Amino acid sequence: MVGLLSGTSACCRWLLSLTILAVLSSTVSAELRHETLKVAMRDGVRLATDVYRDDKVPQAPVVLIRTPYDRTRQKEAAERWVKAGYIFVAQDCRGTRESEGVLAPYNNEGQDGFDTIEWVMRQSWCSGRVGMVGGSYVGAVQWQAAVEHPPGLVVIAPQATWSSFYRNLYLGGAVRLALIAGWLAGNTPKPDGVTAADMDQALMKLPLSDVDEAIGWPMPWLDAWLTHPQPGGFWTRVDLTQQLPQLRLPVLHVVGYYDFFSRESVDNFVLMQTQAAHPETRQQQQLILGPWDHGTIGRSQVAEVDFGPAAALDVAAIQQDWFDRFLKLDPATKDKPFSPVRYFSMGDNRWIDAQSWPPPGMRPTSWYLHSDGRANTRRGTGQLLPVPPAASQPPDTFRADPQNPVPASPVTAARPLKAAVWGPVDQSPLEDRNDVLVYSTAPLTEAVVFAGTPVVQLHVSADTVDADWVVKLVDVHPDGRAINLATGLQRARYRRSLLQPELLQPGEVCELTIELGPCAATIPAGHQLRLDICGSLFPLFDRNPNTAEGIFGSGTAIATEQVHHSPGRLSQLILPILPAQ
Image (tube, rainbow, N blue to C red; front, side, top):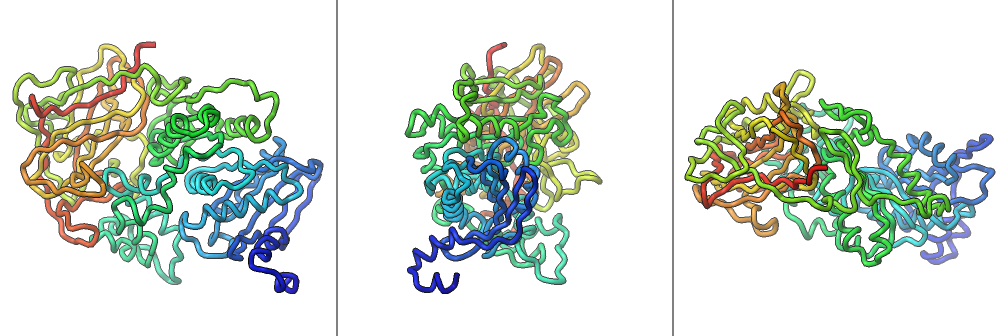
């Protein structure tokens, strides 16, 4: 092989390397054949690749999964896909497990995906049609390959993932600190003999640029992500959003309300359904929107809430049905109708079909914040009422201390600070803190049904040049449990623009608009709607030091933050209410 390649051009050597493979292992059974191969990319780096197929099927469409999380864990999925009439290919991403090269998160996945699909298309067992599956990182590589337009890729099923990596990591100017620090700590080589520090302490490190050192070893990608807090420039290579409408691909989008990818995944669906250049593509999109967080997709138990048997969805079966329709082109599925949107209504715990997201007929409806200036804690005087204040009311005040941030989840013996979850948990212990403002309706006399993106508009002020406002929408049960439904936040200096930050003028009142993300729920009669407002969501997001010193600053300041609610300075929750069904 060396002699053959030495006399060819670089291009020819690359093409030949895609077809001449080193077979590392081969297992043959009565129905399932499994080969492990090394597939060369355009730069010569070889990626470990498993091929599963039925020897009795000479040619079939191919389902491809590319993963940094060990391709060998895909055997069960492979058996299912092969049994359904497909060939299944699983590959370790560059620099992971048995693949060569160095992992540079997301930076090589587009071209490596293209090269892998091109190699698949050259194999005699490929029918000429390829689809891709997987979630999270494994979902993003599908979009990255797709925008390279590899011949033969005809369908994808990206689950809980992004098209703009910046918009996934940053929200309202704050960064998902625990997520990226934990992921990179697990995916960056650790020096021999080094023990990771306690994450509770490491995540409190300032300046933020030194968090990797606080954990225990250098993590260049963590430094890079944390030191680029604004979009553009650095993030251009991993911003695919403008390219999505040019794709001609049926896409199955799956995500949960509590998933940190929820906004991005839903936005991807809306973009493809409404702006795809080809009308047929617009009709070939489906969104499955459930009550899950990132680790519970398809399950009924999510954090502290059991959403009932209906929430336990067989996502694998849905994926197979989608691929039977658009990859295999099974005649039995050709004219079978499907709903563009299937969303789960929390509270009444049922699936609802719709033609779009948000569902047609949604009506924005306001509940206004009221108090006599003492909305601190759930025992304060904060109210949510359907009418705005008729007269001036004193603002509510809390002190946001970066050295004592409000945790994202109540801390317990079983759930330390570093283990904060995205899913639904009882918020009432946090609502006993004096640095949390609480506004509640009276017990509802009739159910409130909504679906879409709740929005909170606040008039706020602070005595520091920067501050955060975090808002949670909460369902309060008759027994006192306060279950979070949706959450949003805004870093004040980015309130008008992420590219042109504007500092607060101490004491000056400004307006914030905070989107809480996709959500659908039925709040039954006897329950209460509630808003919790505070200054941090730590460590799911980084603390605001309130100094505006930037990523390399070590100073902190306690911010005295206020929420105003008077005529001319209304603060309100806007719910996307649906008509009674």
